[in-house]
Length: 555
Image (cartoon, rainbow, N blue to C red; front, side):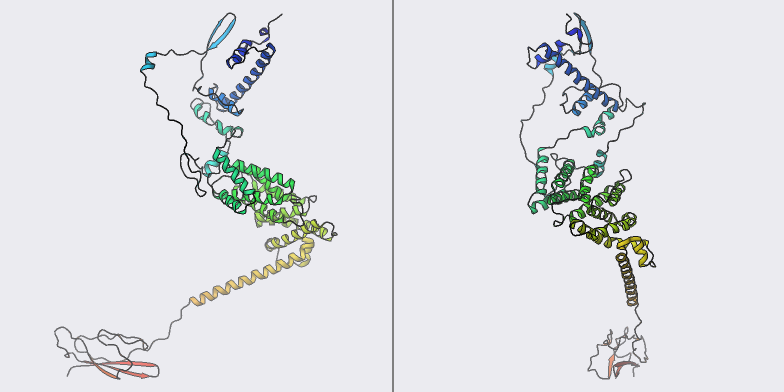
């Protein structure tokens, strides 16, 4: 009878190795069959870890496997890695044989006891202690070493991308250390993430406040979500909570919960400190379900599910304006979904209302390119639903809502693409049942635009007229003759309504005599009165006052 060890291949674990491993953890007396089963399972697990480690080695552009590759493979399998065993190069093993068995061992370095004794003692470790710190003060995370550092939007965007570094064969060895550091980015989707106790408490409080019954707490939580700068680590959890919550509440027809979850998504979209692009694959389909869902509540004819659709359309438009780029083509894909919803007649006009509202929020160009070509089709559906009996009140209500929406936002686009000379018959042929109403609204909008243009022109003309300053009529001047001996004096001319002021003419009162004799100042060394006399003669004729100045030479 052959021994059990003879059936085991050469390079695999032996039965004695398995028994020794079991005895090292305190298990002895294993059955022979159990040992063989453990041997096969250990062999499979070891091979699996080695294969994963080889993948990390290949991603790092290396040929030699390192202990860090094994640690990465263990982390991927959610197994605690080995601590205290790390080396920049491979670890050499020595081989020995004897008694028909082979043994691989690692050579250990001999230590000198004298060197160990003379070596300085290590630093004494500090006793464990507890301390408290502020996680957030008035919604703002303080910049202390105990709190996580808030990442900028650029760094968040770089971390969210899984790009493989490209190295050439020539610098394989020089880039080996950098490639080891790049493995978290290459395998970021496979990493498990853990939250601290404070973050778990914050997540629990935020989610309970947002969907709870207190309006004050809900408003405070929404403000915190829209302004907090330290939500980057919690962002995947919030997005998953919103997506799963919308999925459950749509199936249960709970409209109020859908409103609360949509407000959470809007608060995250308004936060300028987080990069929301990596969460769009979860958030956009969930919010689109609220917009294009056939039935969102238990009683659609009584409950206001239209406001939820309008709010969802606004959030989708915010996502498209902030995160749409040529790499993801978010807005193009959203418009394509709306266009397919408009062509689907099996889902009801409430879905058509959501699609049209979504296109309206995306802008006038989306309405012109998608809604206007389908106006005749929508007009036929609306007319068909309005002509039916009152048995289907939901579809009639949706038809009225859709008609009101189209008549409100389509005339602006029709003003740009239709000629002013188009007649009512042309509108009826092109847009069917909605043609007459659209024709009247377009004509009224053009008249209003023309009136506003005339008002603006009139206002501009009036402003220009007021800015022109006309020249006032000339004021009456002071007339008179002067004959001066020596240095002449210059009288100051004033308006007739203004009193006359001069350094050498005193102020005239209304009771002044018609003729007043004044003495001018002396000039140089001349004696007073040597220059002559100055006479001011005042005459009044109606409302005009004339002053005549006469100066005579001394006698």
